Length: 115
Image (tube, rainbow, N blue to C red):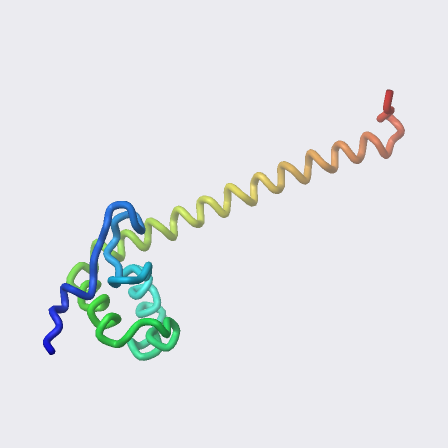
């Protein structure tokens, strides 16, 4: 039986922001590309995701290599957004700690009374 490689990948606007993914899974080409760029082989990726087979992973890698510039730009944008969110979260935690320290300091000085 011959398998059309295009039957192994799909995209839907409502799933994974319309990014191409392996049919029947939520695994995107972007996710496969990240593992690949970390130095993992297709065989290692199939071991990581036991429900995938080599044909599916190689189809994702073929798509990645054919569209590498766009996918790498998307991955970089995702990483930049994650970094921004992490900085924002850390800043909010610092502010909350300062507020808590200030409130605790006032009560500890005897200035806080309960009426």
